[in-house]
Image (tube, rainbow, N blue to C red; front, side, top):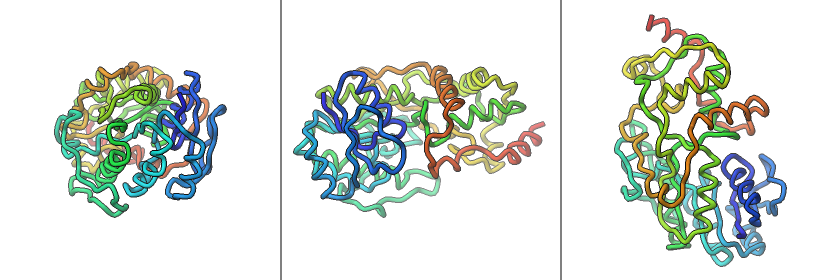
Amino acid sequence: MRILVMGGTWFLGRHIAKSALREGWEVTTFNRGRSGRDVDGVEMVHGDRTSREDLERLAGHGPWDAVIDTSSSDFPPRDVLTAATALRPAAARWVHISTVSVYEGWPHQPLTDASPLLDCPADADESYGYTGEDGSPTQYGFQKAGGERAVAEAFGDAAVFLRPGVILGPGEYVGRLPWWLERAQRGGRILAPAPADRRIQPVDVRDVADFALTMAASDASGGYNVIHPDGISFRGLLEACLHETGGAGAPVWADPAVLIDQGVKQWTELPLWRTHAGVWAVDASRAVAAGLTCRPIVKTVRDTWRWWAADGRPVDHPRWADHGIAPEKEAKILASLG
């Protein structure tokens, strides 16, 4: 197999490149060469994915059995369309890393792969879409839905769309799991969102990478929800964080209404916490039937802590600062709980 990874230096793209090389595949990566380092053993091509000239130069390094696009999040649909159209003559398939945010009903409703998507044209610019008053839908979701449409226009039935919710694991640059690990290591009373037994469904980056390669080598098409089919309770997550870090802490489970009243921002100040009914009610059965396998999340916690303790944050990313409640705010809320 010969594949092209759009990206390839951060988190998911890096794991995809490493896994493909272990399989004996030939890997080309395409990125600007400004952040992160390409994996040893890949063919590196540097350029701007919004430049038709750079994309045509890139196409000359093909052909490939598949393109795996991990870097479309920062680009509007029209740029995704430009890339997919320019590379279509050099690639047999396109595996597109999308998101559950493309669904009309997320995060309010349980979802399957057949749930309706947000409507966004394939040639939309970065201004298209909006974010609702309650935080959904999101402009990001509209943009990603338009990106899917752009790829579908270029590749038709040779396009696959992988729709993760939250991806965790070694190399994470957003900071969700590293924040909980550091908070567990600090110990003491830890503010935690009740109910403690509510299950969450983050997926390990290495499992997403392996599934992307499975899809690249298949003749599958359409959308797949890449969500952990079993998940873990919030209690189980925090217990795993405490165990791995050796933190002498004790979660204090606060009612969601109290957290909201105290102005705690869902999804960010207490990472992975959100009250919407559908946020962790996403059906992954189609992906599982197609070959998605997910390691227990406690192993993701363990391996992330080992990576974090050894290497630290991999890249500077603006979303990192959004995650985690300030110690002073947490202490004030804990004091109010008695």
